[in-house]
Length: 150
Image (tube, rainbow, N blue to C red; front, side, top):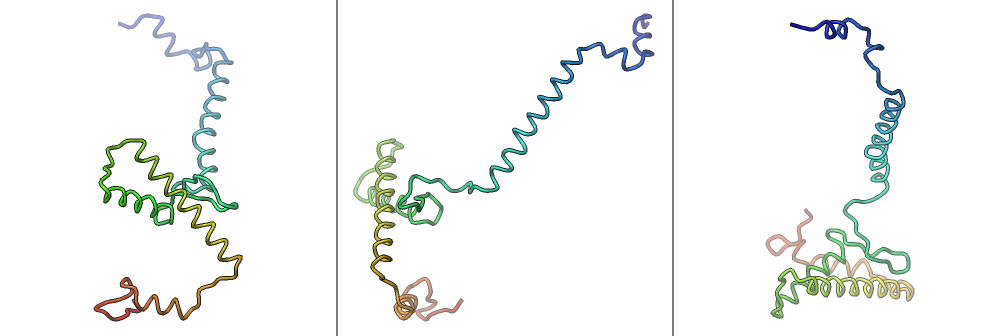
């Protein structure tokens, strides 16, 4: 059987049952608002201007040296790692091996950017006829030994 105190609690209005401190209620609401701002709005705004797949390791005259899939730096990392493995070095997960590969790839990328800047300052340019010749000879553009427009 229910006691008389239980019967009174069920019949009392909601305002009388809530006997908690109003500061706790207001504090809880403030914490909820701060949490929503911190975990919903800030990441959403921060992600709009940044590239999540882009990791920059430095720069050359304001041009970032970034690890981007398919970029020069990423290709250098895989090429140098492959070269070391051909020479008999194995990647055992050693931080020294990884540091050597990434350092050399970074240096190669910085030199590559410097050479591109020097060539641009010297007025060097690639002609369209040379590009056409290279495309006609490159195996990526050939199907059955013939240039493919596709």
